Length: 255
Image (cartoon, rainbow, N blue to C red):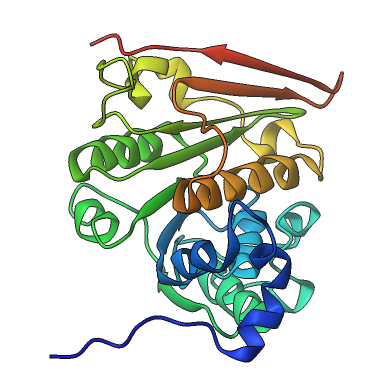
């Protein structure tokens, strides 16, 4: 049985020209992006710029998991949605935005919440997972499932003026032969204090912060797929926009 060799048509070559002329991506790298399947958990503050930049970059298939609807108060920071999208499911609004941006992208929508019953089935279908969820229950579930399914995880979080991002591949070993750290190496215990962190609706958040964190997460996805530069495995980047400071914390496997 003959398989069709993946290729870029003339419109894609023009669309992705600035990637193709990059020595560290080029045509072969762009084809890797086209063949990739990336799942984004959450179509909110972090998920919005992640989805937009992954679509613009030419990711072939993007999955979106979110069971929420668009509200007026979302629009201050969740930039993939617009005023006309209020009361629509976020996955539908996000899919429409992606299609408008890049019709070459295939979108798979999951208007649901990840649970123990569906997480493995969904996550196993993708090459890379981006977690932009807003609660630790989902974060632990996504991280634990990625570990079992051996999927790279880019996980990001937001505060009022601060955020964080790291890449996790706890199923692989480092160049030194040691297992890479897992999500639970950063947050080893589930506690009540973790599950009642202030939300955007109660604490507030500066509008542009998700754009910074989301853009970094999208860059990590592109890096993972094309192989340029140095990744964030074992490094947690903390961003403080109140004082405009970036700090990197190194962490190791502790189990």
